[in-house]
Length: 270
Image (cartoon, rainbow, N blue to C red):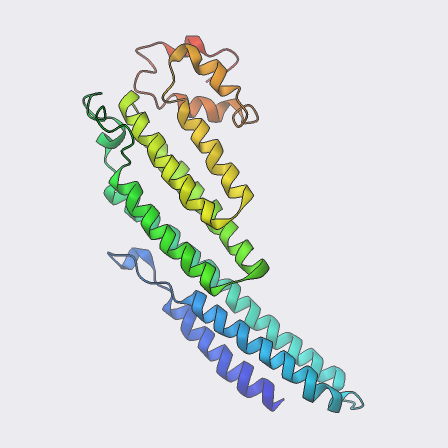
C-alpha cells in the first residue's frame, strides 16, 4: 500500500495531472507549441513497468499467503486503470492540439490563388510546385510524427499513429472542400497531396496510406479532361466510394458549369 500511495497515487498521478494541464490549446496560441505529453507517457510507462516488475519479484511472494492478497491486487489494478485513463485523455488532447494547429496553418496560409491562379501559365515552368501552406503543414506533422515515434512503442505507437493519420486526413479532406480548382491549381493540389502522402508514410499505417491514396485519386477528378471522368471515377480507389462523394469533388472544378461536365457523368446524380 505504501508503494501504491507514494509511487502511483502521489508521484505518477500528480505528474500526469501536471502533464494534462500543460497540453496546449491551439486557439489560445498564435504559433504551434511543443507537445510534451508523449514524453510524460514514455516516462509513466517506464515507471509502471518497474513497479510491476518489483511487485512481482519482491512483494507478491510475501503476499501470497496473506488474507490481504486479493484486496491489494484489486487496489493495484484500480490504480493502474486510473493511470491508463489519464494517459488516454492526455494523448487524445495532444492529438487534438496537433490537428488544431494543422487546421490553423491551413486556414491562415492557404490562398485561393494556390488552387485557382488567374493564369494557367503560372505553374508552367515548375509543375512540381507545392503550396507554402502544405509545406508548413508537412514540416509540422513530420516533427510530431518523429516525436511520437521516439516516445511510444509497440501497440500504443501503432494506435496513436493511426488515429493521428485519420484525424489529419479528415482535416485535409474538409479543407480541400472549401476551394475551387482550375487545371493549373489542380496540378498544385496533386503536388500537395503527394507531399501529404509522403509525410503519412512515416505513420506506418496501411489504413492511413489507403485514405490518402484515395484522396489522391479524388483529386485527379479535378485535373482530367471531362471526357475521361467516367474512366477515372471507376478506378481502383474510387469505384467503392458513394457517388455523392465523387460528385461533390467534381463540382469543385471551376469549369464544372462552363464545360457542362454533368453531361459527362453517367449514373451520378446531384
